[in-house]
Length: 317
Image 1 (cartoon, helix red, strand yellow):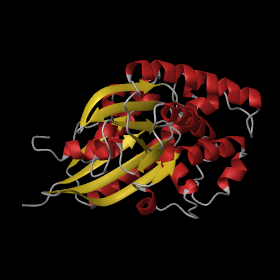
Image 2 (cartoon, helix red, strand yellow):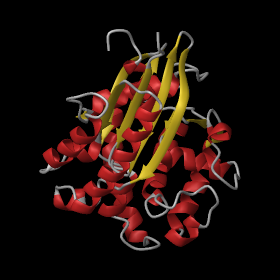
Image 3 (cartoon, one colour):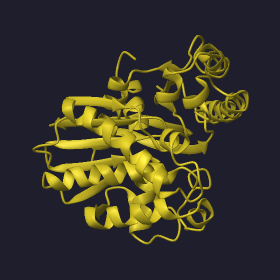
Image 4 (cartoon, helix red, strand yellow):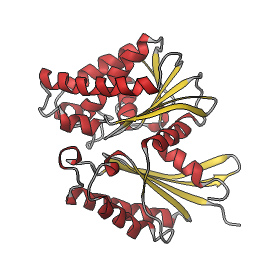
C-alpha cells in the first residue's frame, strides 16, 4: 500500500504556506515546506474587499503549491483561510480561484474560511505537538490580520479567542509613516490594548506557566534575539527569549525604518514593512504576561499548518 501523503495550505493576511507530509505510525514526516508573502489582506481593512493584484499573487503561488504537492504524491489536501477572508465582500472570487487549483488534487476541494475559534484550536494543536511545555500553556498565533490566544492543558483547549489585531492590520490602520511617529505608535497601542482587554476577559492569563508564540512575527523576533545572521528554523524551533530582551527588541524594531529592518539578516523582505505592528502586539502581550509571572517566550516553528496536516492524516479524513 502506498503511504498517505497530505498537503496542508494556510492562507493568511500576509502569507500563504504549504506543508506536505507523509503519514507514519510515529506521526508526520515532513517532505516539503514553503512560504510566500502574497499580502492577500492588502487594503482590506480600508476597502472591505480583496485587491485584484492580491488575488493574482495568491493564484500564482497556489498553482505552484498544487504542482509541488502532486509531484510529491499528495492525495489529500486542505486549505484554510483566516482573518482577511472573513471580512471581505468579494470572498467568492477568492474561493473560486482556490477551487480551480485544489481540484487538481481533490475534485470539489476549495479553501475553507475557518472561524477564529477553529484557527485557535488548530494553532494550539500544531504548536504544542512535540514541544515540552508546563501547563497551563498560552499559545499565541500572531498573524497579519488577527491574533489568536489559546490557553490549554494536557493538549486540550480550555479558552480561545481571535482578536482583530495583526501586523498588517495594525500597520495599515495606524503606522503610516516610516518610521512611525510617536502619535502613530500611541494610536496603534490604543487599538492593541483595547483588543487585548477584550481577549483576556475571555482567555484569562492568571496561572499561565508557558507562553508559546507561533507564526512569522514571533519566529523572526526569536531569530533576531538570538543574533542569527540568517533565518534557521532548526535553531529557532523551541528556542526561548527572556521577556526583558523581547520587549527591548520590539521597541527597537518599532522605531526603525523598513529599510533598516530589511538590513537585518533573518528578516524576510515581505515582513520588513509590517513587523513593527507585530512587534507592538508582542510587546503589549509580554508586559501583561510578565505581570502574572511568565518570564520568557518559547517559539515554535509548528502552528496551524501542522494542526491542519495532523487532522488530514487521521483515519476517515
